[in-house]
Length: 248
Image (cartoon, rainbow, N blue to C red; front, side, top):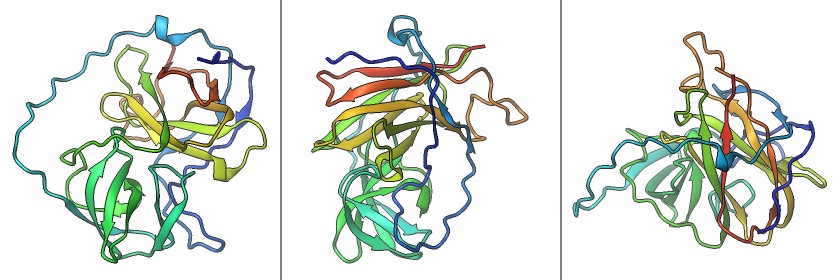
């Protein structure tokens, strides 16, 4: 595996739009997350110091068939993509009211595999879909033809941090088209997906949070200091978990 580099302070703005791009799009809904710029500071290797997760027991698998979830697109110019990320090619574009069927999810629960009414399939971000319940009843599938980055975010009290945004952006010649963000799930896990052909240095770090995160206090203020970001070189030579921990 190539060496993960640690860098000095470097601020980049991360776009929080998920899967929406068009020359003159209608404005998207104002997100509820609070945004903080991605700040790169020297960090120690976190994997040797972070706690072992104490995770809830998963329910016993059953043989009962799952039911696809009916959903509706809530914004115009919403893109169906070939993979679960903003850097994957577009399959087609849909407007508010378009109906889709959710058939599977990736483990971060940010993106779902869908079937459209015009018989197209691909990935959509859950933030701009309206449906009853949540996506956890859907089967989790391994995403093919993608580079997968993953890890966990930890609270100051060493519990998994939920609904924390983990962003990625290219270091050389940065562009909004080469940025993405993933929110941590109930286990503090995050997943980011990039096309196989992408390479070079990329910065990864925490930079946003939801007011529903367990990392905020009753007033909606973040508990602790942001973890330092990390720079990685793609393609990775081995599977590695990138860990981030809030500090006092």
